[in-house]
Image 1 (spheres, one colour):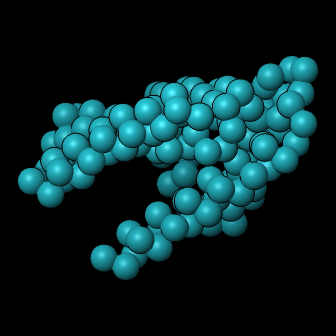
Image 2 (cartoon, rainbow, N blue to C red):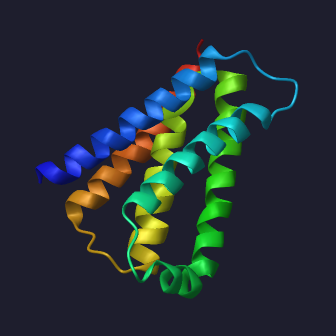
Length: 144
């Protein structure tokens, strides 16, 4: 149980660093310039990590999985466009909306509906509370 929490904490830390960087930089005239730069740095770092840990089967893996790599890349583009629009127009505090909506789309659609991952009463309660969080956050935004 501690490993998933550690991995989630690493991802959350990275996300916080990304949002900090985006919010600290002035908004560019070109809405994609900041994210393109950040993703380029990310790609260079991942390529370096892939080269350091390369194996004999890497080329075969890429050849067999290129379609899903393209799908995931499109997902990254949509995610970062959404981040840019959300954070630059409404601020980092709006992350709650993204986080909860990600819980719903990733857990329900990808995890449960597509991959048939286990989903019990506790998970259902968590999803209900996530939906309540969106409602409360939206009400809170309306009240200034």
